[in-house]
Amino acid sequence: EVQLVESGGGLVKPGGSLRLSCAASGFIFNNAWMNWVRQAPGKGLEWVGRIKSKTDGGTTDYAAPVKGRFTISRDDSKDTMYLQMNSLKTEDTAVYYCTTNGVHYGSGSYYYYYYGMDVWGQGTTVTVSS
Amino acid sequence: QSVLTQPPSASGTPGQRVIISCSGSSSNIGNNYVFWYQQLPGTAPKLLFNNNNQRPSGVPDRFSGSKSGTSASLAISGLRSEDEADYYCASWDDSLSGWVFGGGTKLTVL
Image (cartoon, rainbow over all chains, first blue to last red; front, side):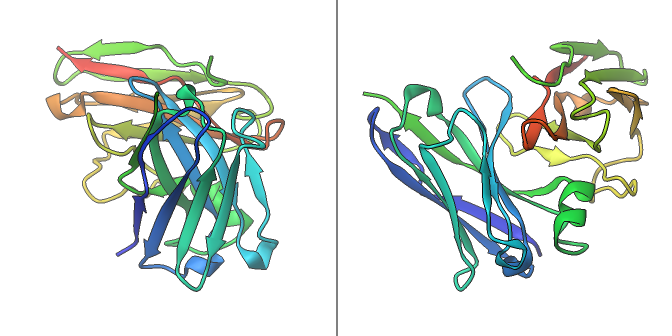
């Protein structure tokens, strides 16, 4: 069964740092392109960023509100993706979801865009408050 | 302000057909696929169907999607009480190089 499990959420003060993890199972992680999506309390969904597979360059892309503060990385030996969050602001308070695209069908850019974000974790909550 | 525009709310009675709209631009919906998500209270979003019309287990074929130009819509037929949820549209945006979402539509079954 394809599964994503996030961890590492918690309470942090403004200006602080936190690292989230996303443990994957049930598919070939090192071929998968992965995303982070967040949802502030009572608000809609917001894409945070993505990391491509190392085969496809391992590059990252970020949404404007987090660029320069957040870093996505992956450890394929542990089937785990990370989100390093620095210089946290109160507006970063949200549930953070790990997602992936089309891993039931294949890997690479075609599957990423054709199948969309079709696997989601349960989310981990980050609260930024003094 | 979301890049994709959805009505904040929609409603219907059991058995009715409800349509939720999603409006975008040529950099997202106009040139890319559109996806629809259902989010029940306190749970993670769930993709309703993919471009092959395949559905996760438990998602009935009462849910269907369509696209025309830079707009898309989600139709729910034979409305049931368990369909009460938040619905989001999403698409890749070529200009922003990222996924964009609608602000979400809260569906109420009267």
